[in-house]
Length: 283
Ligand code: R5P
Image (tube, rainbow, N blue to C red):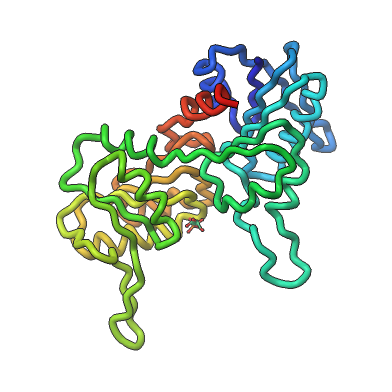
């Protein structure tokens, strides 16, 4: 089996190859003068290929489609999309809109597709092959558990929608878990606070699947600090971190930002490679 790393997931692909004990193919990525993308897999592909490529941008999708095509000689091709972009548009909200997640999924030809904490699992139904979606929250929980300087920590989901994710990480941690809720204090005053717990003098980790603009998290950090929380950490599976998200988070007073390497950023300290390797071995 050969592991093929796409341009957006080169480090993760190399970690997956090491975890599997497989060779990592060297690929060439460049642009033609008109800016079209050129991709070439320099090594022999062999009978079975695993392509690892997150699709946070349109270019990442184009790269993935070309890599799949370049692997046409392999009898078995597995596609790992650690972060699948466009998966948040999983419904048609207004007449005439594209169901973006479906549009993307339909283009992927493979024997198996593996995703990590895909935003909506219903998106998996749009792939025309077997799919596996893995949960990296326990890995994040283990990493947080090993940061041993926490004072009476609590794990929070930023909203009810992320409760399951936080609970999955908290199980590893054996610590309190709650979610933030909007509480209306008066006609025009709304307070965002944990539904059940008091965070005063406690360290807090807020965990979400995606941090995109950082707006949701920056607001949560600010509110929790106003409510007397000690250090507030932001953790996520997918660090999209668009535009000035890091600046926004840092100016909100966050103690640190931690994520996995489904998208390769400076904050990507928890690798999903062991989980991916285990899943690939079980295919
Ligand atoms: C939304 O459904 C996701 O789970 C995140 O809460 C959202 O993407 C965060 O967005 P932002 O960082 O732009 O506030």
